[in-house]
Amino acid sequence: MVNIFKILLVIFFFNAVIFAKTETDYNVKNYGAVGNGITLDTESIQKAIDSAYNNGGGVVVIPGGTYKVGTLIIKDNVNLHLESGAVIIGSENIADYAEIHQKLESRTNKLYAKYFIIFAEGAKNISITGSGVINGNGLKNYQVTRPQNMRPFLMRLVNCSNVTIKDVQLLESANWTLHLLGCNDVTVDGVKIANTTKANRDGLDIDACKNVTVSNCKIYSQDDAIVLKATNNTVCENIAITNCILTSYASAIKTGTESNGGFKNISVSNCIIKNIPIYTGIELMIVDGGNMENISVSNIVMDSVATPIYIYLGNRARPYKIGQYVNKVAKVEGINISNINVTNAKFPCGVVGINNRKVKNISFNNISIKYSKSLKEKPLAVNKVPYKDLSYPSARMHGTNLPSFAFYCRNVKELSLNNIKVYAAEGERRPAFVFDKAENLELKSVGLFSNTNTSTLFYLRNTDNVISTLCGTKSNNNSLFKIEKQTCNNIKSINNILQEGQREIEKINALADIELFANIETTQKYSVKNGDKIDKLIAQKIADEPISFEFEITGKTTPQICILIKNNSDYPEEVILHYKNIEQTFIVDWNNWGWAPIALLTQFDKKEKIKFTVKTKNKNSELWVSKIYLKDLKLGYTD
Image (tube, rainbow, N blue to C red):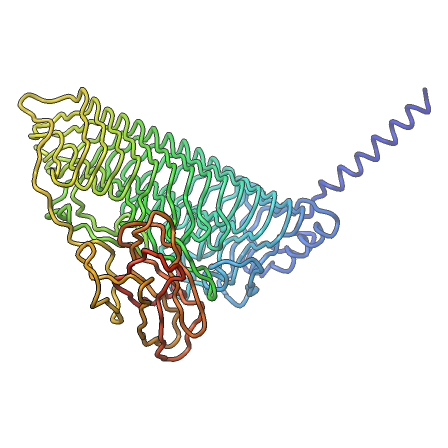
């Protein structure tokens, strides 16, 4: 019995020693850190981190005090823990930072940042915790906006796994605050982020990551609060954002200003969004070739938000690096927005695709939006809203004087609106909803509340297959529907609610579309002069005769050749761009006129005339080309 007791005692102490070793604290004071806010403590804190790493991991403790640093590198199995009263502050001297060029490919490499206060690449089982503060010292320092990479990021974690960032305060970053790039299995919980200075100072950037949860965070940022990006070809997926309070001078939650890899399986829930004076509460966009699918946004309260919700598919097709290009148009499918309550909105929500690709399978359920600002200027005519396919995406890209006040929907298929209540601002006279180039609409229990004589609830043009049930207005407008009669088909109304003397449907003559495609500002254009007329455009069938032309390339640029093309067949085809013994293809899987923008694989350093040929290998191809433009991609410009 005694021997058994001794054995158990030995096992107990052995486990206790192991446990103590894995939980060892490494106090930075023991490594020479001063913490007076004047002495540069980078080397001392890094010694503590390295010591913990070399001993298999542990907690690097930052006790109360202010520790000025340059760059700290976090390593495997290290928890950087800031105790109450502890402040890590970034040095005001850029020379105190290590210049870092990460290994993982990304558009952000060198362009956005090369200096960081906290950095890790390829690290496992790391965490930054505690009630202390990491301050970027950007409130008074690093005020020059560009070049952006001369302002240090507060934190960038690259290709890291099993990451926890909990309870810390991240303040006054000189650049982006917390950038997660290519990371897997990340928890961000209870973090407070506050940036009060303008210029590219995002709160949280989740970039090409997988399996990320963000919860219980408070973020105030002059740039976007939470941004999902895909700055390489990796899908940003399995992201859950919940129980956060967000305020921003830009957008609160946004995807897609850099979207090469696309977005999949994203959930945003139980958040409060307030004081977004210019941009958007929820902004879901994709423009660079990646797809966006299976997105859920639910239980959101918004107050004083300029544009509550904006869903957009564009076709900028910008590559994330030189020598790579986008060869297809993206898809947006499967977005569910539910249980949203908005007060003091300014501009209409948007669901917008492009002429050659509709956004698809979008649903809005249980939405209430009260607008506080009516349009004083003349609204855009419904046939004059510009296309912006290749532009930088934003809810304001089509202007702030859209022809509807609540929702503007164009190039959309399978759109469902259920239990939607919109409240017009005093003096608002635009329609509540405009649908243009829409297909398969389900409108159920959609209500307009207004004290003034708005023009109508629904304005329809170029729209087919609509079912409307239990929709109505509490205002003195003349009709429920206003329909351009020559352009709409199969409109069904069932048990809608009409006011006394109100017509259900008012049919009007159709307005001719001013634009069939996005205009591109450039001085170098080629247009087919001899060919067939298709949809008012002169076009050439490239299977019969390839198109050859010359463009002059200016120096120091990455050009994009934009081909206005239409596919009259029922299956995808490839258009080929040939130049300098190089061939690049673009998949054309659309039947309306649209751009195939092809970024050249070669960067040109001097002015040069280049001969191009546009062709196809399929002798039976039904690809028709009308125009070819040259565009400068400006790869060195940051979003």
